[in-house]
Length: 489
View 1 (cartoon, rainbow, N blue to C red):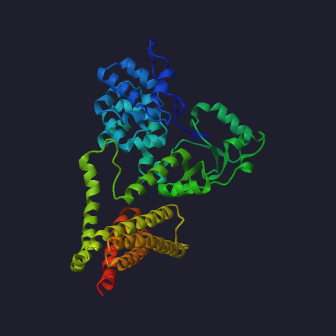
View 2: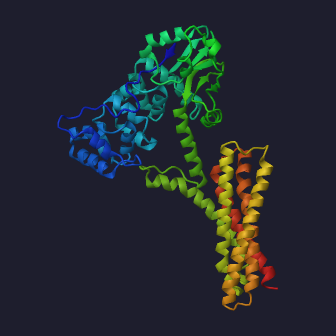
View 3: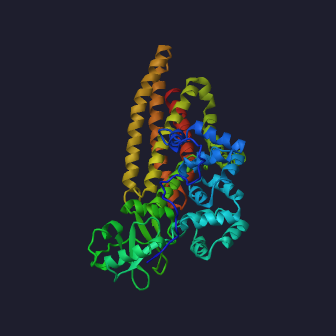
């Protein structure tokens, strides 16, 4: 048995738009549209822009027909708002459904504002429920109500329950179209049912979930296994164990489970254990990309600046972290102020200070990046934290010694060539400061994300500011403190 929403065309097809009889061969346009790296060709984009500006409907349909829906979605990012509206006017609901789910969130939000509610409702009816939910949650409240009201009852009842789940949970991520069968069925009965109800099955599915009378999944039969088994075999005899996903589970946790157990699909269950949907690997690929992007951006203290991001929004997302960084750097510079009389006597220290702090900053970032990735992938936890911390400290110490030798010899050679009597002591000061700062950099880089995670904070968000402060503060303090002991004896 199954529940599903029809999906009219295969994912690998290009858009099914009418092409004028006198149009150029589609194969030539397909070759022109994409480069060898599958990125849109600038010349092709220029052709679309020209056709949109001229209002040439036939030429637009011809160009769009040569593209995969994902490429049309990418194309939207290169067009102005006016050109997008012109392109949208030539997309039927079926084509629109395939494109909307591929759009960048910022661009999709802009496009959804210009699509009539009735047209959007028709497009949602052509989409899988998980994609439809993703689109509906981006709508303003008034338009969302209009679109849901315009949907047929079957599609509406598949979408509305998912909206009740928290964002970025399995309930929001799942699709309600799922194939299931009772455990007493045989292979033959299952295949015969699928042949009879083929039009009502999901377009793409990998497993048949075997359920008990209370509709709880008790196992799964891969489609490839089903087709290789004799007809009289019972599903209960051939089913495999399943990894159930609770509806309230965070999507990052779901992605971790899929990766760890190499899943292609998994059933989603309500708190009572009842089967309510499924998550497939194509959904998880998007989650992994989304979470990875978030971590990378968080390490730099910024948010995603998409192609349509406005300047005030970008400034608002980045400025707070720069202000915090300004405050911490001011504290670090206070160390320089304490030793300013000594710097006036040994001007070379002013030249060498940026080198020490910069090396420490880079070393700290290396340790921080490794730690954040290890925490995200569950490779770093209480069981091995002490060993990992010691490893990073030893690495920092050894790197410090190596760089101290290189930099110490360089400083000695430079100032000895200038016949500076302090050449050797400057080299020794520089070497010891580098060793001290790289040790502190390794300590801060590995401890900051661990401590933040223990405190329930995102280790990727503010760790970089803490590490930068620690390495700059220690870099200045180590160089100037050691200098006061060695150079001014």
